[in-house]
Every structure is written in structure tokens, then in C-alpha cells.
Image 1 (cartoon, rainbow, N blue to C red):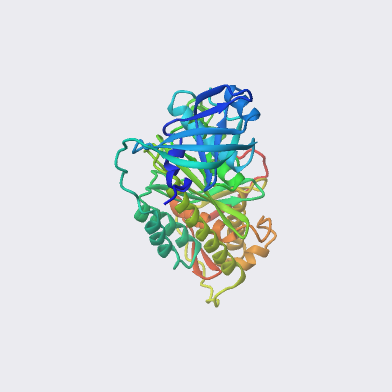
Image 2 (image 1 turned 90 degrees about the vertical axis):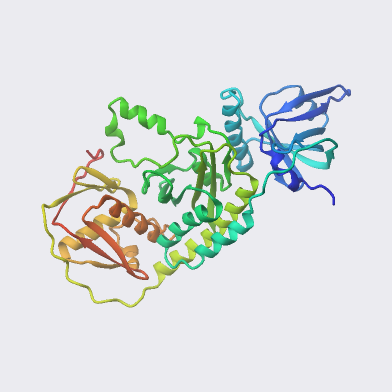
Length: 450
């Protein structure tokens, strides 16, 4: 059987540096180490261009080279004959390699030295195994069986909340991935917000990250998987910065922010975009305390799972927002007891506080304020997705915004806070509002909620 590039992808993860041999136009040879060789497809690889050195000059003069790569677990060696095609300085491939190189640099003590200038793309003309002794390969995780198990677990979900929870539970049960979160896109705001998480001390539901920030944000911006095999501060999501701000007594800056969940000692991270019909819906993110926990096979499996997840999210979104089950008779509001709960609303960004505690902001905040106003003024407790979609008080940008996901987010935030306010789904496209104590609604038009 002819050896294929697909068979040696483990050699192309930057665990053991490869080597490259080039020649200048006059035939002078040069051999040097490679920080990174990246698998692109069955016929192409890319290397990291970090310095304008002898190798770079030779490749521009003579586009043919030899590479030697080593399997990180068996020490088997493979020799490639390659032809230089072009260099990319932006885009999905560049960002994937930039993130991976940051982890390699951090792991080898070269952070700040290794800086990706470009991704040099080569066509692989020949691939051969180098004779020599090697170790037996390690046990292989059956990612295909795990993917099948996860797919079967989520395919019967009939609402988004169940879909989100079952997706993360299936990663744990079938793939052994203990720490994961699912984020949805807020397109107009250019941010992603967490709607589900698993394995963390704090759920972080409602936390946000900007598109373009860290592994998650870059995966969303470039619509490509981003995988890091070693801890790197460049992709640490600013948790240390947040701690420093709190220690400096500037916590007021953070009072209306929910910390993004995450492992304090994350060693491996993988973020996969969730797409449907060519549109970005969100990101599936997993991490581990182990170095090199996620390889190419794990990435393939999560990309396939994210594809199914995207179709399911889109279908359930459309079902909830374009159809309704039969209405039930609206019950009278339940009797409330206890001291009044002050609910403050800041219309500039739809931030909502319960008492002195921040709850939510943005579209989810405008939804909650609208529901509470109708409850207070009209004693309403039953609502539909369709009327909420058409209500001008709810700042939904367009039909592409996922109203049902916002309701899931709001329902889970209220439940976590034990807020005496609850939202319960009663049927497809319908939900009810529960209020257990008297409310005092206060709208405060100011730019700085306190």
C-alpha cells in the first residue's frame, strides 16, 4: 500500500521539530530545524515562516526541498520531497498555525521569539518511510465510534436547551472530554455568549467573548478549527488580567461581566465553529489539563459533530419561531410573597440588575424587561416566541438572530440566581413567566450602571 500523508498526521503536530534541507540556486545546501509542519490535506503541508534566513532565501530561489518528520510516539521517521507554492499571511490556515505556534513557543521557552510571519505552503511530491527501529504505536481512540454515539444521543432532542446539554454530555460520555462549553453568536455585537458548559466550578452562562479573541474568537472569525496543544498566555482569555483588576480595587469595571468559565491550568484547547447553510451560529470549545490532548482525529470528530449540531440548531430555531403548538388557557398570576425585588434596567445596553446584582444584558436583557413590564402592567404570564419576535421593545436585529437561544440563556441565568423569577417552556413556541415575590421595576437611563 502506498504511504499517504493522511497516515502520518501525528508527525505534523509540532511535538518533535522536523528538519528541512534546501539548496540555493548555485547548489549550496542548507539544513535546519522546522518549528512547525502543518497538515493541510492529502497532498499539501505548510511550514511556519518566522525569520528571513538561509532556508527562506533558498526556497525563493529553488522551490524544491526535502523534509524529515518524526512520529512523536513511535519515533518512526518519514522523508518528504516537497515543492514550494506560496506564502499566506492571513486567513484560516495562518490563524491555525499562529495559535499552534504560540503553544509550541510557550512550551519550549521561546514565547516572544517565535512569531509567525507567514504560512509557507508546499505540495508533497513524494513520501517514504525511513528504515530504522521504531516503537509500537499507542492505543488508538476510536473517534468514529465516539462520534456515532454522540450523534445518536443528540439526534432525538426536540428543543435547544436539551440539544445544548446533550451535546456536552455526549462529549463526556463518548469522547472522555470533561470540560466543554457551547457559545452562540451575537452577530451585531460581534461577540459570542455562553449558553451551556460542563465540568467547571462556575457555569459561566451568559459570559461573553469578542469575535477574534483567543482560540474561541479566532475560530469564529476565521470559521476554522483552532487547536492549541500546550498552554500559552496568548490564548488565556484574560483571566489573569481580570484577577489583577480585582486586586487593584477596580472591580466596579467588572460588575456587569460574567467571567468566562475555564480551567486555571488549561494545557490543550480546541475550538470548532458551528455553521449552518454557510452562516456562523456559534462555537464548540473543549479543553484539557493534558498536553496534546486533542489531535487531528479529535478535530475531525468535533468538526463532524459541529456540522450536525449546526443543522439541528437551525432546524429547531426555525421550528420554534415559525410554528406554535395550541395555546393553553392563561392562568392567573400566582400570589407573591416577601419583600419587593428591585429590578433595574439600563436601556442603553439593556443591562438588568436584580437588587444590586448584575443578571444579564443585551438582547436577553431587553427580553426580560419586556416580559416583566407586561407582567406588571397587564398581569400577563404566558407568551409566544412569535409575538416576542415582532415586539419593537425587544431589540432583535433580524430573523438570523437566535431568539430561542436567548430564551435558553435567560432561563438558565434566572435559575442559577434563584431570582424568584423563572421562565418555563410550556409548548413549542410558547413559554410562561413565573414571579414569586413582588417586583419594583426601575428604568435608569444612564451610560454607567452602578
